[in-house]
Structures are given as C-alpha cells and as structure tokens.
Length: 473
Image 1 (tube, one colour):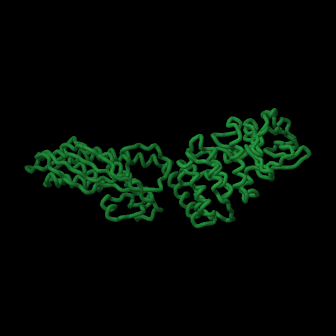
Image 2 (cartoon, rainbow, N blue to C red):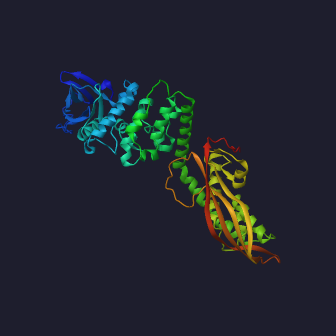
Image 3 (spheres, one colour):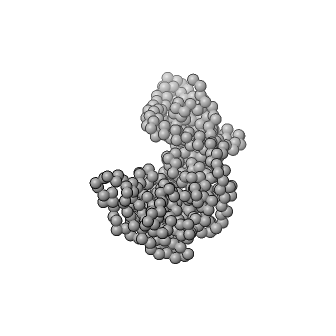
C-alpha cells in the first residue's frame, strides 16, 4: 500500500514510485505499458480540471509525476492523516460528487486505494482509468487485491458500493486495515466482521460506522449527511480489548469448523446416505414384516400421541411403527434427516446437546442457546373424533425450517437460532391390522392428511459459544 515513503521530490516535481525494475535490464520496463497516458483530474474548491500525470521509468524506478503538487496516498489515512481522516474523507466524497461517473476509475463500483490521492491543500486527485490499470500492473498480486477487490467483496448493491466505501475508509483510519480484507471473514461470511464497537474506538462513532457497513442500511445510505453527523476522535491501541481477543478466538474456531466441513463433509454426507438407506429399508420394511408394532394394544387416540412422541424423539422406528404397510409419514424425511444430522455431529464433534425438544424449550424460557443447536418437536396436541376411524388433530410444531421460503445461503455460519412456530391441522385415518402368527389385532394409521400448516410465530434466540455436553468415550 502506498505511503509518503513512496513519494519523492525531484527536479521535475513530486514523483510517486509505483514499481521497480533492474537498471541493467535490456527490456524497457514500460514496453508493455502505454506511455501516452490520459490525464487525471484534480478537484479543488468545487471545480474539476484535468491534470497531466506522466508515467516514467528511470534509475530502476517506475514513477508517476505529479509536478509541483505533493500527493498524499490513501494509505496515510491510518497513519499521518489519521487525526484528520474524517475531513479528508469528506473532501473525497465532495470530489466524487463533482466528477462524472464515467471519469472515475472504478473497479466493481469502488475506488481502488491507489486510484486517488489527497493533497496538503485539501484537493483530491483521481488517476485516469488507464493509469489506474497501469498502477495495478506494477503491484504484486496480493497488494493489488488488498487495495481493490478485497473491500468490494460484500454483497452491496452497485449504487451503494462507492457510498459505503466512505465508511470503509473511516474504519481503515481507525484500525489500520479494511473491514473485509481479513481472509477469515471472507471465508466464513460477512456476518463475522470485526465490528468497530468491539474495539476501543469512541462508542458513538464506532456504532455509526458499524451500522453504515451493514448491507440493508447501505441501500439508502447518504454519505454527505452521514459524514456531517460524525464527531471524529482517535486513540491508540483500540484493538487491545477483551472483545477483540474473543472475536479472534471465535472466528478461528469458525474457520476451523467450516474448513473441516468443506474438506471432510463428503464423508458425513456419505455416512448420512448410508444410514438413510438402512433406515428406509430396515425400519420401513423389516419391522413391518415381523410381529405386532410397539403401539399394538393402544387406542386410536393413544396411537396418535405415540406417533407425535416418536416425532419429538426423532425416533424413525417408532414413527413408522404406527403406520400400515406402504403408508409414509409426511414428516418421515424431515425426522430422518434431523436424526442422522444429530448422530453425525455427535460422532464427529462429540457434543450431545444439539437438539432441544419443543417441550423443554417451552418449559425452560431460555434466552441463549449453544452454537449450532436447534429446537424441534410438537406441543399442545388436541384430538377431535370426526368419524368411527378418523381423528383430526390440532398441534403446535416448533421447527428450525421456514417452510414458506427457501434460502440459498449456505456459506455463513449462523449467529442466531431461528425457531419457526406453526399451527398444524392433520387428519388420521385408522385400520385394524393383524399378524399371521397371532390372533390379536391392533390399530394402525392407514393415512395422514395435512390439512393446513400456518406459521404463527418466528422466534430468534442468540447463539453463544458451545459449552454443551461433551461426550466422553
């Protein structure tokens, strides 16, 4: 990243060193670069004018000549310009507002840090698009990425990106790094950003910058009024706080967790597929072929309660035990998937507290849950007889799934537990069954019809670092 150390004063004025080459090299270092460079722009006192910025190669250095104007690279915002960073960012936004959008050297809707420069006089200089590309050509791959595409990564709308960049620059001035440049954040998701409010920065200022970096507020973000509302202050050592230390430990754990699932997840999915196949064949075929079910001897009402208990316990065997041959429960796939997922996590992560039953959740009144746990089950079952062999049930289902929408987001690790609460109405039809080697009969469910499933509540419980039951073998 360019700093004042890259600027030198020579006979021809101020020059910014953007790259080096061997002075003994026979090849012209600028041969692959266009030397007839389009002029840049300087914005001062509400006016914009073009300014020549010649590109030169001399004495083993590739430079941009600024004439008698001393350029201050954007990298100085977190060092020599830190105390006045807000003032410089205000000047930058005013300059952007004066420029034609087609003249701004944007990349993915944002300004690379090497494409604009401040001056000691309060002006702002923009390189041409052509010269910006030439500078990028001289940078190392990592340096070029860190000063451009690394902070254009979040999913902001195209029109919002240049606006939110003003908040990013102030974040940079406070911390010394761009908010999304950390590879751990880019790998685990934007939600894991180190918020400025976790640091020792002034609370009101930190909160304003954190809010500006959120995706939704960025849609209607007005940089001019926002910048005017800020009161700037800086202090040293703002990253030396317990919250920052905890954040580093937390994101390291998440990165390790996510890396494991991305590298070894196929093994878990393979095991899941095998177990599901065994469950589908064994529990739905063999158990039906031999002997009365465990629910034999129960009344129709008791069989319904037995069925819901099996669903709550993620017990696929008992769930199918109540059904006639060839009848499939509407929640079979869901219960089997949750059961296999919990068993796989128990095996690989050695935690046994990933699933909380609906009854335990309702009774506990908890306000926090261990990371990656969820709530599932049926409560408040009421039964109404509507025919000799037909019962209608009304119940409350607590589920981790939003049945009304499908989300494509798979990369981010959630920070909150979503609990969707539904009121469901179902009709159970019964038939009397018997076994070849027994004279007894029992009641089996011959069909289950879901009449309605309506969401009545959406509960969000914050996750806390996992301290659940560790299985000891």
